Image 1 (cartoon, rainbow, N blue to C red):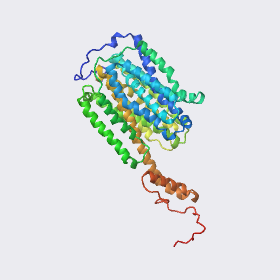
Image 2 (image 1 turned 90 degrees about the vertical axis):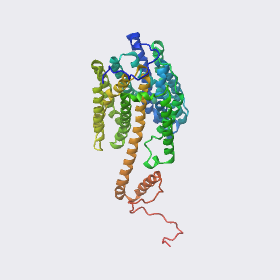
Image 3 (image 1 turned 30 degrees about the vertical axis):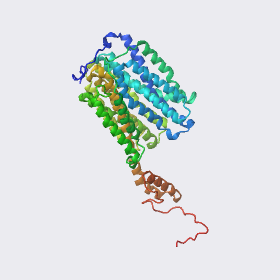
Image 4 (image 1 turned 135 degrees about the vertical axis):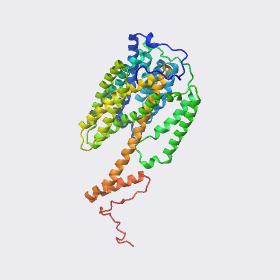
Amino acid sequence: MSLTATASPAAPAPDARIDYVSTLTPRTKALVLAGVMMALFLAALDQTIVATALPRIVSELHGMELFAWTSTSYLLASTTLVPIYGRLSDSLGRRTIILVGIAIFLVGSVLCGLAGSMLALVVFRGIQGMGAAAITSTAFAVPADLFAPAERARYQGIFGTVFAAASIIGPLLGGTLTDTVGWRWVFFINLPLGALAVAFIVSKMPRLHSGVRARVDWLGALLLVVATVPLLLTLRGDRPLAAWLSAPVLGMLGVSLVGLVLFIRVERQSPHAIIPFTLFHNRVFSLISLTSVFTGAAFFAALLFLSIFAVNGLGATAREAGLAMIPLTLAVVPTSLVTARLVSRTGHYKPVVLGGLVLTSLGLYLLSRLTVDSTLWHIGVGTFVFGCGMGPLQPMLTLSIQNAVAPHQVGTATAGRQFFQQLGQALGSAVFGLILTLSLTHSLTTTLPGVRERVPPALHARFDAWFDAERIRRGAAPRRTPPGLQGPGPPRPRPRCVPATRP
């Protein structure tokens, strides 16, 4: 697989297309990339800077029950709209879509900063996600418009470092702003950054139009929302196995399945499909989309559950758990830049992709061997190896898809890959969360009886309360003394006027 790969001959040709690769000067290209990278940094920073401020936000707005929804609403909007924005950017031009995305994102940021309740914050975070979807789906397609295939690898690698930089700056900046001027400035800080990005894009970025004059299949877009939103709403890993078989969950999954079937039926017949099914005839697009699902699940699961393991399994503080993840970032940035330059010189990226997959698998294997006897040093080594694989893998997957499709389908194909990657993140969170819930419940159920027998009788009620709560979660009636836990307990007080003997 090399940078000279061409699109499938079956892809339809555009009506007219400006060759921005040869018409724009290197200085103009650099300024355009600077503006786009600022916008991308804006969207990437928001995902890390807000997480640091959430505890303070919850304490002031008093909505702990909506804590998780501040991220869920953002994820719902960004994941669902990514392929729609990708299709629009091919039809209307990258410049139009990215400016619309920045505008929506900044409006959402202002509203989040002014939110007076957790419910309002959840809604406004969804608006932010709508803008972020337009930014991310467009930004990664811009290098394909500005540079020849042999030069794209270098710039895709630079784009990949934006997320790594945001993961370092975000927590530090979020904590500083929250402790000094207040958590609302976590959202207001987006305004000057967004204004700077808009200035670069408006002054220097051309339309970057694919040449295709096509209508948008809004029926297909609606069905995509119907197929995606209920699925994402059900993909929560914090529910027991029995809850996955409950009527509400099965109903949501049924709605999602019906939406998917209708979406496929409509899109197969539409000449203006949101995700043209001719793309799946392209072997590279199909393979990369599938790979993106698994890499998205692996990456998100590693970030999510390693911190939980460090704090609850190893007894580390939140700060120590965060420091243990720094090797991941330190590995992603240099490997992404070095391999991008290597691919630009050699013109072959298949070995880089395969090597990234091998290192990612090796890193996951090392992380899977962690035990309660492990240290933060072991986590750092595993995440470093994992980052050495993810660093070159992410930009090269995007590059391979862009080089495999026609120029007027670059935006749609790039957004499609991002859609499948974010869908993989949601699936990974649900699957690995379910595994954690089941394994933890099984371990507690099998080990607590022995522990209960060795503690003072006065503490037995605490164990019984846990088992009662667990039975209720599973839909069974609570029992004061579950099977296997019979034993001496504290004496129960008897009413004065009731005989002590049984009738």
